[in-house]
Figure 1: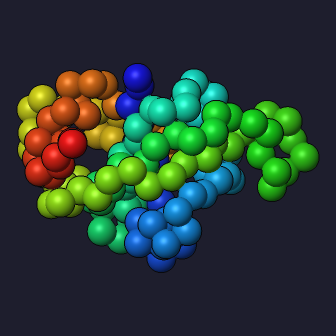
Figure 2: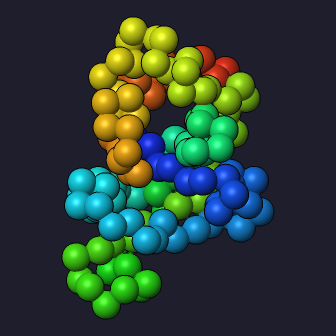
Length: 138
């Protein structure tokens, strides 16, 4: 399994709305590095859901339910989408400030590549953030 981080401005698409929708197509990505990360996602992979700009915190975990395919919002074949479903709430949302203060997360894409909308997360980073957020896996 691989781990990821996806960003959304809560005013445009919040974790709460995502949970109400029960599933979403992650479309509109127009950055090649982010697109490559979407391309590399596999069904069952987990992704932190990060509220960008307003909030700036990891608030939930999404699961890849359908692997990448052509983005239906454009005719340009370079762009892809992935489908996600909500997987788990983060009990205590983790702010960007907390992440930056944690030495073991210093190399996280969220810190190093701040403008990247879809980033990679290592297994160690995923485990650490889940511990910080008091996430319990059944």
